[in-house]
Length: 484
Image (tube, rainbow, N blue to C red; front, side, top):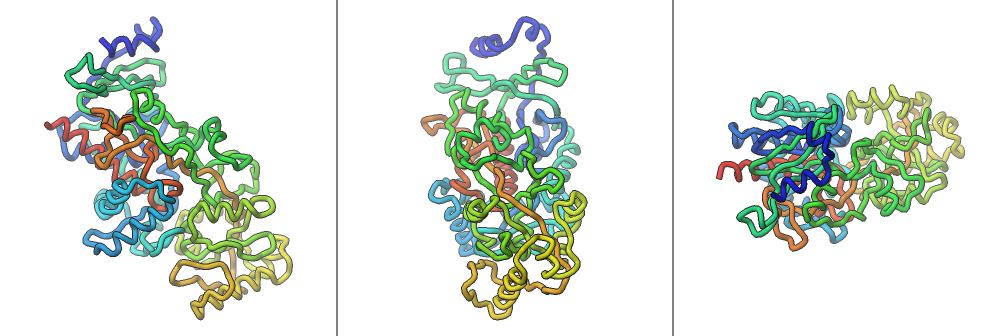
């Protein structure tokens, strides 16, 4: 059979002797928010379905656990005008490459996504944040910790409460099992499971009777791939070392269509750690810090960009500065709104305090005298009059007003690779498509492993939303196949 030939191709005799076989209804590859969302929704629709979640890392969560700004969503019952505004924001940021069908699903299902997360215990704040590129505030966040970690923790708890879902960490999928047209009643290939390797080297054939869901994330830590598409040097990243594009490779091996892999997002603000300024992997300085009123200034103490423009434009503005870096300036009022996550940033000295007002901060940062004071004074004038004057445009409807003599916080930041917009092509049912845009039977995908939702540039807050929305669609679709 084609399946046996495929397994023999990459398996040595010793591996064959150490090979076991398992039978499942659905196998989910990846345990970030997309994979866990898929598992929860699949189990709810089909309580009798046996579902396996495979994760190559030692812990679940992936890059979802590192997300720190929030998740965009409209309330259920939102009128068509607000939905269209959200859709238009996504498409504008995508620069003409966004798949309109996927964008429409993303927006229309956003209310379901936030309601689902509230139901499983995510304590979203009632205060919405406006992130860059958004025409209005629609980002839900938490103040009890990092939003990504909070969401992943609640998803994990929800999965662990389900008797028919099993998570296995340190289990790397090596290939998908496929029956070609000659081995099935189908005219095109059909995915029937995967081959994975456990920590002790055991190879396991996991048959998935009705579907495999790829939720493996992007390739933001695959420097070999990134060097082909990113001109920024040196290349730094906010991604974990597990982000190597595994799911894209698995899909390609069975004929999946891949699109837009050359579209890599450079996030404008990652922290430059004063203890390790040359570190290759950096901690993200969340867009929420700017959405709450933080400003960006150059070494000269002047603003140079609309802090809430799209990420690609803000990043390019910073990369054009000497040293390819800037300073993020905050105050105590912003710190209070950020919540407990600020303790982490301050504990790592990524964000530092200056209690002596802006004049003292100018001295600490080596800025020309009174430049920063004038920058903030001019900004305060806009906050009072709501007139733009000659300063870079600000989109947010209400500008934060600073006390020039108050206590400030600051961080040195630089752009880093943050997200890869390209990946496997899917339809609105999360089915993976082949080169002819036909679904590959029993193969689904959700999250950053896919390409098409965000186009050229992703809006902040849309990654978690994409994972929850399309993860839930993939999970339901897979078990609906099981039930039928």
